[in-house]
Length: 251
Ligand SMILES: [Fe+2]
Ligand SMILES: [Fe+2]
Image (cartoon, rainbow, N blue to C red; front, side):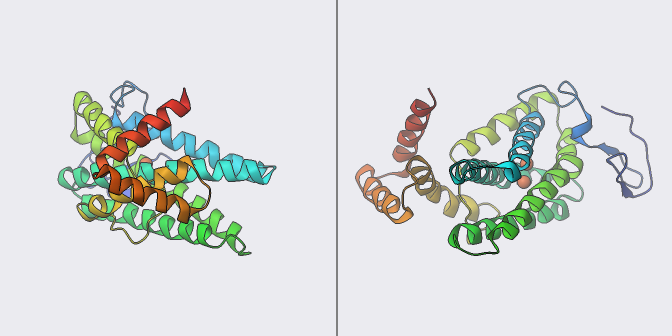
């Protein structure tokens, strides 16, 4: 870890260092190497990798040539943004509220960003012909970029301060497991905090993932899912099936 010393309060843009009176100097995780972040499997490395993927995809957006390419890229961005954020809301932010002194305020800010991104993307998806669509998409990208900065510079360093390498890797594994079954679409009506987000969000992820597998007409996919739900009798069974299908798809 970097040098820590008591400093006056404030955030220094140029160094990416947050200074708290009489406390530690929290170093942005973007400035630390893999060993300092707890190794490849740690939550901090997993977050940074996803953020880099998102950044690359958003940077590719303006250069997208065909509608087909644009649609495929949009789906990839949406799936990664929402599964990533849902797992943060479920696993990381409750933990951060317990260990960080300004945890409530810090997590409240990113939850607001997540909510705004949910609302914008839902609006984009509901209004295919609206001329303001590209404006909303740009706005959503700006918020995603802001969210990444807040997390890497302010929130995630608090986890580095609070936990050892082994704990950071265990948190990473838990976050990844939740992300693997998380909703992949915007759900602005679902609360951003547990238990409400899990109670209402997890069942929706079944519909989201079926729609991702066969993105032809939402209502039909929803009907198929309802029939399948009835037959299986439990969302867990359907989860397992959807995941097996996705795995096969990737091999
Ligand atoms: Fe993140
Ligand atoms: Fe986030």
